[in-house]
Length: 184
Image (tube, rainbow, N blue to C red):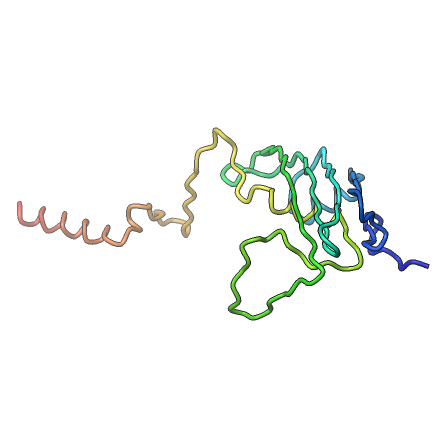
């Protein structure tokens, strides 16, 4: 009897073909997409798909290669209007049996961030979620949006301008006042 998989999309490494690639194709249902929208703080997510294969590398390691496609909707950081972004990226992960995880606080980050430890299961859905999270724009901006200035102050007072907030703005005003006093 084989152990219960962590999720419905998990593939047990012991059952994978040692001679040929094992294909996968994921198209999450509405509930899974809604969970991703919530987790990634998106306004919308459509056409999410992740297709590829797992192939053996050497005696004990595995490589996942896939193509991620999605259309995400997010609010523009300047105007809050919806920004639609199409994501089409190649994803590669290498699962290494003898992976050594360095937990030291001052350890260098390895250059190859596609290497992961190999466990009993490989879940393409987890790889898909991570790749999507990394591909979503951090600061989406509508193409024709202009930055806006917001000034807030107490009622009855004049808001400070950007020019007045500069460190030498007070000196410039003092210089102008001294020049006016000398001219008089």
